[in-house]
Each structure stands twice: as C-alpha cells, then as structure tokens.
Length: 153
Image (cartoon, rainbow, N blue to C red):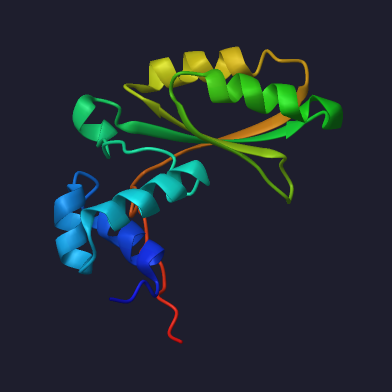
C-alpha cells in the first residue's frame, strides 16, 4: 500500500465530492478509513482544508447582479478598508492587489438599486480616494476549484 501523493489524491476526491464518506474515500484511494481520517485531520490542522461548504449558485437565489469594485485607498488605511469590505454581507471576495488600484472587491446583489446603495455606502469612507465599478454581464466561470497535480516520482 503506497501513500505517494495521498494528500493530493484525497483533496482531489473531496473537490469532486465534498460529501464523500471516509469509507468511500478509503475505497476510492485504496487505503483504510483510519488513514483517510488521519490525513484529513492533518490537512485540517495545517489549514489546507478550511471547511466543507456547499457551492451556492447565487443567481438562482436572486443575486444575479455581480459588481467588481476597484478601489484606491490611503496607504495606511488599507487594512481597515479591507476589513470593512470583508464584513459587508454581500461582498463575496476582497483582494489587496498590485497595479492601478489597491483593492478589488466582488459583490453579489439582487438588483442594481441595492448594489448602488451598498456601493455608495462603502464610498463614504474618507480613506477611499478613487473607485471604479464594473457590472458583470456574463460570468463565464466563477468559483471554480482545480485538481492538484500529482507529482510523479
């Protein structure tokens, strides 16, 4: 029984089916349930696997307006601005970035009025020097995971 690439294989299996049982994972990977359990616990302890969550289609729940906010922020205020954005209910992603802007945030909204209200509220922050907002016309791919490469030895 070989454990070569077991963690990557385990992660790939969970990416395909996050609800897989320990027994089914063990059968698929040809290892014991105990081995699967131990490796999963280690991956969780190391923060590699941070949770098991459903993949939600926000469009089907009525959140079919996606906005991309680009913000220029006063340098020392970057941590506080990104923390405020992270706490905004409908912001699904917040990134500190290089380039012309300092922050990119992605938000999901039920309509353009709600989007406009929330963005105006965000822009009242005096530490935000400049903004640019784009509305997504078509999400070609979104929230995709990818299988890990299995290193050959």
